[in-house]
Image 1 (cartoon, rainbow, N blue to C red):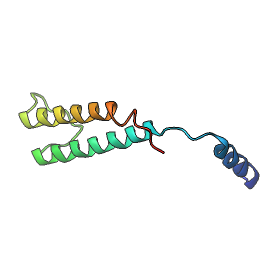
Image 2: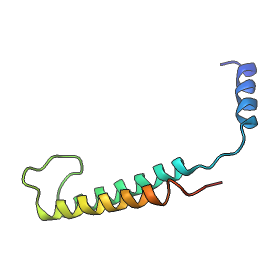
Image 3: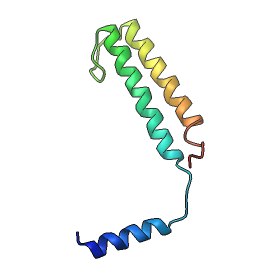
Length: 83
């Protein structure tokens, strides 16, 4: 990419009016939820993302907590304007 096209892209991006970054806050929130889920699974002695047949109670609790966290992200962070 040459300097002229990089300058044009930069100027075009700068001309776009500021927008709420709600989706970015939502993504950051989901990342935090997934990090906590990984820690929960690890604490229970399992690997996050690996299917466990039967669902031990600890994993079910981790999944419930992950669902609650994700729902909170959807209701709070997705609609929160972030400058």
